[in-house]
Image (tube, rainbow, N blue to C red; front, side):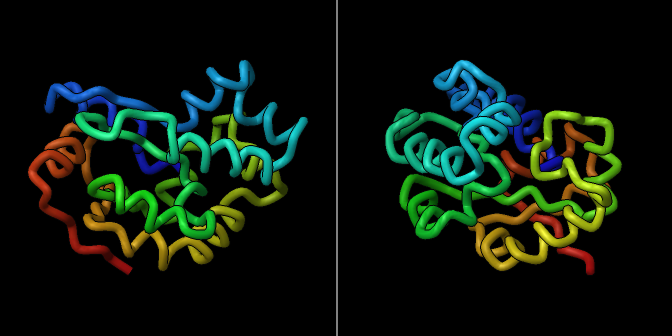
Length: 162
């Protein structure tokens, strides 16, 4: 979350003349409600099942760039499923950068806690191994949106900083 997946994905797909789909937006359209409302009324497990269904059958097999929600790859077996469908790119950002990008966004159900920065740090620690196992990892902290899109298209990566 807050790494720029949706914005970068949309621009990269446009430049590469591909269809763009955002898993969260697609799920919201199918459910007829925001992700935060799905979490509130049905819970996280139900939402994760909706993500699994989207990956299995929610988009074309070719010619499509898909932006997946931050927790999707952490679902058992989904990282391998994603890799079987195409190139998996992780847009990486440090917790402080993520916090600065999303601190005013009220549509982040996992961050409706007393200390969101601590929660971001916990989520990254739990998901880090999965994220860094992507085919391509791009550190976005010091890149502009345009630079990140260029990096996605070129297939080059930035070295992660600790």
